[in-house]
Picture (cartoon, rainbow, N blue to C red):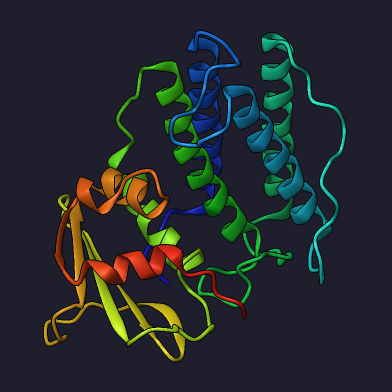
Length: 253
C-alpha cells in the first residue's frame, strides 16, 4: 500500500474540501453555469452528483460487509441555491457521521474490492477525499476562480487513483508496459500493465526504463489521471500510445 493519509486527516479533509466546494458553488454566476471539465453538466448537476454520492457511501459504510451496495437515495434534490447547498451540507455530514461511527477498519462493499485499495471505511474516506478534491476543481473552474490544490493532498490523490482506479486483476489487453508518473514535488509512482492486470509497482534503482512517463506537478498529474488534462498538458516521454490505451481501457473482471 502506498504511504497515505491517516483516517483522522481524511475526515478533516472531507470537511475542508466540502466547504471549499460549497464556496465555489456559491460564488458561481448561476447553478446553470456549465462545468467545462464535465461536458454536458451544469453546476447544479455537479452538486447533485457529489451530494448523492456522499449519501450513498454513508449508507454503504453504515451497512458494513455486504455482497452488494444499497440503492441510491431517490429523493428529489432542491433546485434553489440556498436549499441545494443545505442539502449538500447535510449529505456531507451524513457521510462524516457514518465514517466516524464505523472507524477505519470496518469492512464494506466497494467497487474496487479486487484492487489494492482496501474495501473498508478508510478506503472509502480516502476515495471521497479525492472525489471532493477533483470536483472542487470542477466547481471552481465553472465559477472562473480555480485555486491551487494542497500539494500533499494532490500527491496522495495520484497514489490513490493508482491504488483504486488503476489496480485490477483483469488482464491488460495490449503489450506489457510500465508507466512512470513523476511529480515535480519529488514523488514518483510506477504502474505495471501485463497479463496479471494493472498494479502499482515499487520503484527501484535497478528497474528497467518505463515504457512511458509523465511529469508535472502533483496537481497536474492528478487532473491528468482523472481526465481533466491531456498528455499535451504534461511532459511526456516514451510511447504516448500506452497512455491512450490506458485511458480507453474498460477492464472487465
